[in-house]
Amino acid sequence: MHAKVSCTFALLLLLGLQRTDASHWSYPDRDLDEVFPSWGGICDTGTLQSPIDLSITKSLKGVFDELKLDNFEDKQSGVTVVNNGHSIQLANFNNEMEVEGGPLRDEYVVEQVHLHWWSEHTINNVRYPLEAHIVSRNKRYANVTMASNFKDGLTVIAVLYHVSNERNEAIDQIVDYLDDVKDFDKINEPVRMKNPFVVRQLFPKLNGYMTYSGSLTTPSCAEAVTWIVLSETFPVTLEQVDNFKQIQNEEKITLKNNYRDLQKANNRPVIVVLPLDKSVSDAASPLQLSMGTLFFMLIAAKLL
Image (tube, rainbow, N blue to C red; front, side):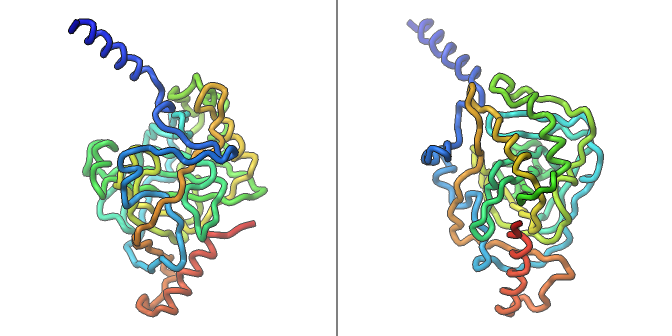
């Protein structure tokens, strides 16, 4: 009897291990008005969940040390592109890139970059066609899993893209490999880029940002993220975005979108950080605070 139970347990365990990540959680089909599914755990019960709408009226002006992005302009060789069943992800950068300064107290090292078609964050309730997440780990912790257990464990730089007739060259470099990874049977099978990739080309000039404490936007939804959402959006064509919508997350079923529903802000402070030449001298003045925030949001929410 014990042997039979053990064999059954082993078989169930083996079957579980053989499943792809795509079978554990999913996004709804927005075209069919499907309700966003419950992901369970802190994803449903947390109070610092992401993404959120970034609002003028709930933003405060902040002044930090310069936000530094070290080695982001390096030509990265051997970068891999993978369809993980939930997104397109870039990883395996041969030169270590670091993020420090700004709202961060420690140094963070870039682990991966991934994309969401339709942005996860909205600005003044405007949703953009694409959002890139540059995910970095606090160097105090050995890996992302460990870092996810601490409030200062991770930082994510979010780049929002606006619709344009101008093709985005960095996005095109990723699009070039989508045919190699888009099919369901290619999930979790990374492909190496033949040419060097420069992460800095994924986003525009650092013309201010908004920062707040939040979570990963995918399970485990760990509330360990300092978000840095860049103020200035970057151009992308709808044709480029449509390429990502051909990614399969199930056999013959495409991942038409992969953005999470907006989460409750729960009175979290969202801090606006303006460039030095755009700073407001007296942050205590309600009028100056409003004008400074408005300037930022006009840049961030620009539309064609």
